[in-house]
Length: 179
Image (cartoon, rainbow, N blue to C red):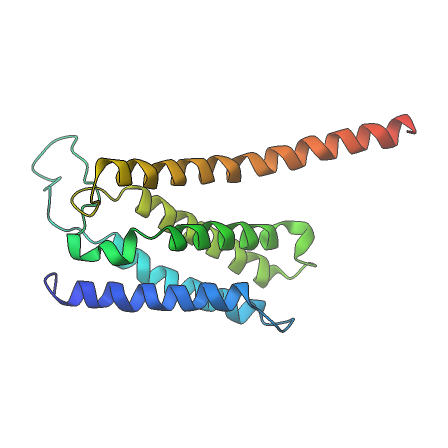
């Protein structure tokens, strides 16, 4: 299975994830968010199962304190080393995260639960992709650019809630001060 089936599974998973991301980003009809979130979740879970596969590079049970890194075969490069995929994952994560905010749910608990689950799953995919290493990168520069993009994008995402909180504090002070 590892020799042939896993790469086929990755192909299917990434294709489904790409289609789910495209459907989410181009949602034309209101009221389709639940269905699209469910589709994102299913495709993402398949991707995670493949990305988190133990490729057998390191037997963590025989080496105390050892951890495994994600060293997929070089043939996976076309699926994983894709700036367009990373950009889309960050865009969709942000959009889903915003939908998961309590004020955006209109008390739709099932929607909120699904949106937070999908946001968590997208974070797990980004985390799995941040652990990719090995011969999948053609050069040290490419590897550096890949990780620089991941780190920069993650920092921007983590700063957004802080900026929103700061803006809310400033606005509340204006309201209290009568300005």
